[in-house]
Structure formats: C-alpha cells, structure tokens
Image 1 (spheres, helix red, strand yellow):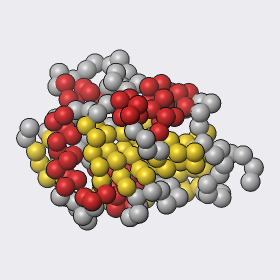
Image 2: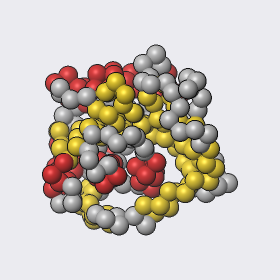
Image 3: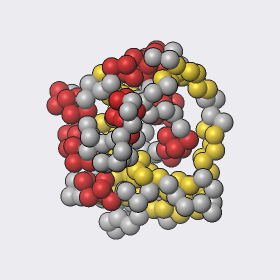
Length: 237
C-alpha cells in the first residue's frame, strides 16, 4: 500500500492512499473532544490512527486503545503508534468492534468514533474506501450496542456525524445515554455546517455551565477549523 507522511506539530504519521484519509474534520473533532481526566480511552474504527494519537497527546495519563478491522489499514496504524512519543500507552486491536466488545474486560472512560457517514449511497469501487465511508459493517444500532457493552458508568462518548444525519445516532443511543453537547463544524462562520460532533454520557447532566461558543476556532497541525459549540439541557444540578 502506497503511503504518504502527514505532519502535525508534535507528531507525524503515514496514511495510505486508499481508505478514509486524514482530513480537517477528523482533526477538528479530535481537538473538540473533551472528558474529565479519562484513564481508559478507545477509538473505534481508528483507521491510520489520527484520533488515537490526538487522544494520547491530549490525555497524558490515559491508556489509549484503537480498534481497526481492516488488516492493511491496521498495519499503518501500528507503524504510526510505534513511532509516536506515546507508544508505550497506545494499544492496537485488529478486530471488528463487535468482536472486541465481546472479549474485552476493559470499561472505557472515553469512547471516540468517527464512523462511516453514508448509508445506501453509491459505493466506491475501492473496497477499503467503501468500508471507511459506508456504515454496512458498523451501522448505528450495532455501534450503540458496542458502546453500551464497553462504556464505564461515568464515561463519555463522542461521535462525529454528518450534519443533518445526527438523528440516527441520537435515536440509536436513545434510552442508553443522554446527548449533552454538540458542536457544528463549518468551513467558515457563514458556511452551512457539514458535520456535527456529538457528546453523550450516562450521567444525563450538564458538564459545563452556560457554554455557548459561536465561531469557536480549533487549531491543530497547521489546519484551522471553525465550529459552533452549544451545551444542551440536562438534568437540573
């Protein structure tokens, strides 16, 4: 598989020319993700490992697990993890998310997932890219079951969804977790949002008081993204 190097400020990584490539949205999502000092973190469907690497940098006390089903893509993630400054606390699992959830004894304080966006639309002729972009292998209800099985009682779940498509994730997790925060991503302050970062918890409470940050800027590795972050109502304090 042909690879190219992608440079961040504090680490570099290689990525394949097929499958889901590193993009501004995934970097912005990694910057937005927040949790209360997690010790066990997992990136479901890690691809070449960008979110797992960002979580290792962001949470210096955490053990970060990364699950990737595709063998070739997992090999690239393994190389990226072994070459990063946090290699001693990043662990790769070449497995389906469903199988990993069935066998792992771990419960995670933070789950991050940038899942495939598309359902039923025209598929790429490249099988790796098709798997990365279409949710056949991990539809919302399957991902919800995985999350329920491995999430710690006071854990956080962050999911990146296509704008206008976030309801399928909210519906899948309804009755299991509470949506507590969202952040819309757009190319500039006047553009229509194209993606939404969603935070769910089992706590059903407000994590941050009165947070509303229009035009929030996230800077990472030479990219700059603009989002609007809004705290959603929860249970009274």
